[in-house]
Amino acid sequence: MDHNVLDIGSISFSSRLTDYYDEQVHSHTFYEIFIVTSGTITHVVDKNVDTLETGDAFLIFPGTKHRFIRQGECTHRDFLIGKD
Image 1 (cartoon, one colour):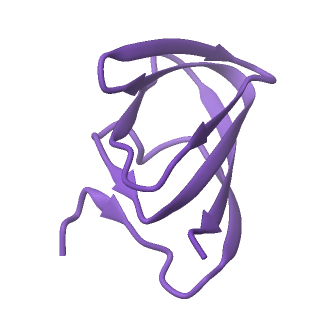
Image 2: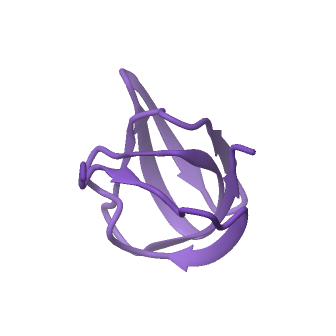
């Protein structure tokens, strides 16, 4: 199994509060919507770099390789939605 690909299996919807474990380049087999709930985070998709702050949201499509860069405390709410 490719450890840089996260798969939620047969779950069609999940939500979690995340503040770690996402700094490596990774992709998913599902859609991810994340909302920054506190702090600031840098989000990298290909060569696009965005600084996101509390209240900002982002939609990630299945197969999109991305990563986060944390330079301080930041928490985001992730909504994971199966492709089907």
